[in-house]
Amino acid sequence: GENVEQHPSTLSVQEGDSAVIKCTYSDSASNYFPWYKQELGKRPQLIIDIRSNVGEKKDQRIAVTLNKTAKHFSLHITETQPEDSAVYFCAATYNNNDMRFGAGTRLTVKP
Amino acid sequence: GAVVSQHPSWVICKSGTSVKIECRSLDFQATTMFWYRQFPKQSLMLMATSNEGSKATYEQGVEKDKFLINHASLTLSTLTVTSAHPEDSSFYICSAFLAGVATATFFGQGTRLTVV
View 1 (cartoon, each protein chain N blue to C red):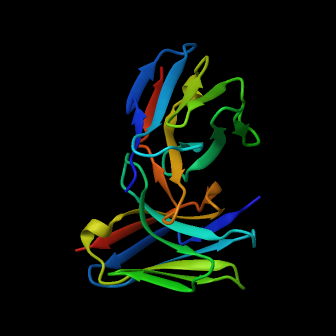
View 2: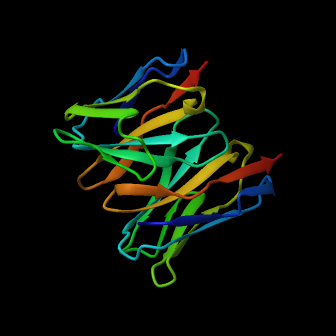
């Protein structure tokens, strides 16, 4: 089955700096890679996703890159703000079945 | 985006009793829903895949007789924690995916179960 590893587990940045979170996956059949933001006690919220036929996707301050050959994908947040502080999870799945999550990264943006 | 509603959002029950959690897709039909468990400061762990009209598929290590899943309609899946024990206390979250042009997975708001 799919195995997703995520690094770092914690990340602290100064407001305005960039944050990068990296994930690797094991199943080459995986074709959909979403990123979720979860605030304490709340449901994960989809913030951006990428499919295996695309190498990069950007949405305002958030971007995701995918390297299928190396089986890794990354989340980039630019111009971080305190409200970006949360736990971020990457995930990998084949056609949304059996979605597997990384262990999560606790991002703290210091004002 | 699509809405997945989960109920209740929190529940406290006595050890030995059973608790039912509902997961509804409000504005779309979901042939497949997923149930996750999340312990404090940990990731979401897939417990089982719930398929409408058929038996759920459980992940290794998840007791199917303890965590009963029923997916009787295209918009409702239920998870029943039977004979709950304090170690079952956790955050349970369901998800459903909306197939189509914008295929994406949406989560319920989660249920915090505390067994005392």
